[in-house]
Image 1 (cartoon, one colour):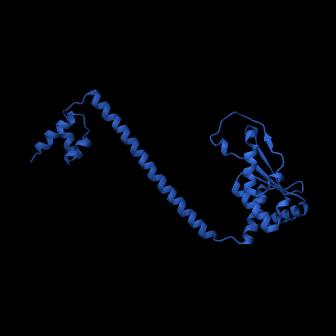
Image 2 (image 1 turned 120 degrees about the horizontal axis):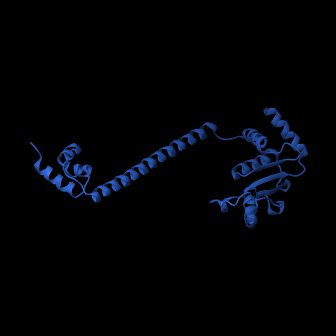
Image 3 (image 1 turned 60 degrees about the horizontal axis):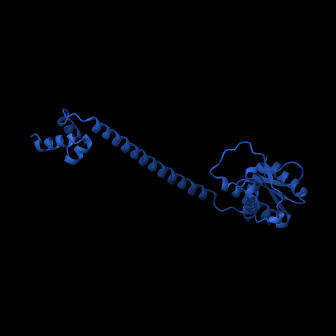
Length: 222
């Protein structure tokens, strides 16, 4: 038996400019039935434009929702992988610290001039290498000096930059040497301007003997 009441209601709603999907949902019938009932109803240009705008908006919301779901899945996967990695590594003993430090120095430390010098812009790496120097070689803080290399556009922030690295390294400010300012190559403005602290160079005084020993450690890894 034909659903006359639903058909009439569907026609009324369609004439008001509602979509086939909306009508089917309201009347709890199939979209095929609504499409058949309303096939002879012509929508105005205004109604058509309104439906198109709603479709675009709905599609945009759908894409945002999909992107959010994908992001949440990706973050959850990263979280799980990090937990697995942490479990696989376990606790780090002194020998682990010693070997990792050699690798770090091999990559970022000075291999010439018979002086120990290490440079990096990552505060976590700087913290690790400072730990390596102190725990593996029992070097007192008086043996450390440091200086910053940073673009001259940051010259008004030098005090803040130096205090930042002093806090990271525990090297007193009076053991910092003059900052090296590099020349401006462009005038591009960066969003993280106030969070940029340049590259820190850590040096150890009277270190020629230790320098050659570290080179020997590196040779042993090779």
